[in-house]
Length: 195
Image (cartoon, rainbow, N blue to C red; front, side):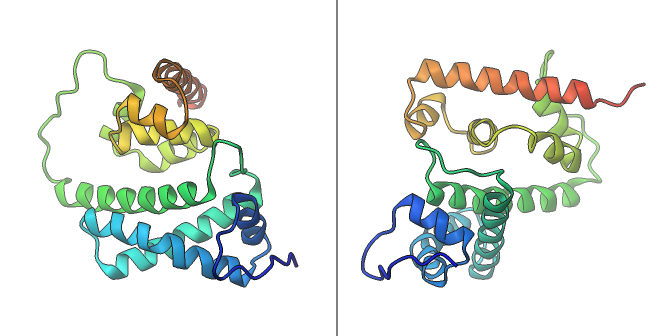
């Protein structure tokens, strides 16, 4: 088992957090709860959740982060912080839950939604409530593409905000978003059932 020196009064580096998470290090887990839970709690409460929701989603997000790290789906990179990833996973899970609950409540309403002449593939999937399939296809993208598309489509961040968060120029962020959408469309076309 990896031993990380006791740092109760100090901060861990992202690498130490990542290694400690992989090794199920008790002190690292305690540190993550102490430092990250308040951020997740604030987000979930501000999005209409309760204290219990925040605790549950933090726990689920921590487990998902651990599983993604163990499987190699999430890898620590110079432009990715473990804390940011964990908070985003928790927030994403909460938004997904509230979206599903909202969809169930409104399912009886059949009013068509106007989405323009040329809706994106992403919008079509969300409008059709094909969440399970969408999640399977979306998970085939790399972490960076997932992060960019979540920020833009689900968290409604501007390209300027995304660029700042990823330490990019705004034009580079737009180009990356475009390439990610092209990859997602290619995955969708490759997985589309034949008529």
